[in-house]
Image (cartoon, rainbow, N blue to C red):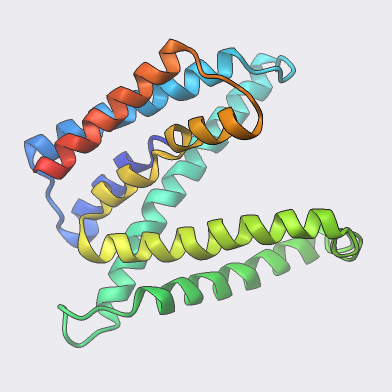
Length: 206
């Protein structure tokens, strides 16, 4: 997902005519490098089972596909927010945009689940209070606050810059997993986080 800003920047240029300056491009590149370093460091220390080459290739390609969809979706949403307003300086309210995105996403998800015959899992999960509590918390901070704030972000800045800031998630997770799971990050992880923050500093200076 750390490659999402690349797709957002390219599509933002093609669809919205957003042109990032040299310093902004440098800031994006440095931030992505730092995030990738953090992710690689985490992967090396992971206890997950080893995957064969074919499975890993499939996973990487699907990850890149998901990243591209994130970047393209952000740009298209921004285009819709401004296209819905007669006055280009007053786009569609970001909360309304987030609601529309969630409604459409929910309709598509339920359709796909019905076609895959996976909807039978839902009643079982609804009875599990612990799981539902965690799901509610995840939905509140992710699809609600996360998507809403992402819509606010693209309202006030370029899609590529907003996407870069959102790609900092692996860096933001470091102190949380340290406190909650007692999982300490190595010096490489901290260095990657520092590089990412340096890239963000450059973005804010441009």
